[in-house]
Image 1 (cartoon, helix red, strand yellow):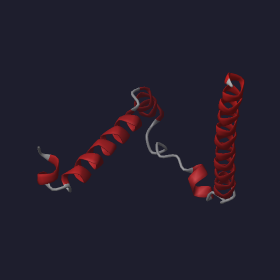
Image 2 (cartoon, rainbow, N blue to C red):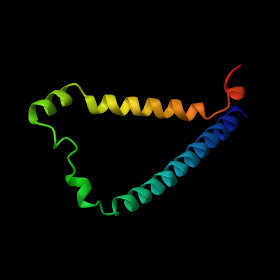
Image 3 (cartoon, rainbow, N blue to C red):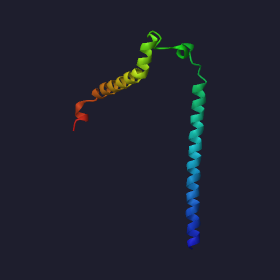
Image 4 (cartoon, rainbow, N blue to C red):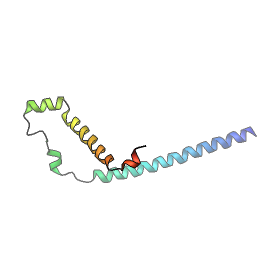
Length: 96
């Protein structure tokens, strides 16, 4: 009787792994189709040749790059955007 129970448990575990693997495969196929669709969209030439720091002289551009000013500005912009978005929620829902 224990052998039959062990067999049924191993059968159940194997079936569960099969279902999970099938779902992962389906998810992978969907993501691959989305990736193929997105990569088939042509990128405009202005986006590939755009240099936002071209107006800055090379020494200043080096300092800005060394200090990661673009990253700092991006973090500040994201922080302010989140703060302003959260201020749109009424205080009655956020203050306990």
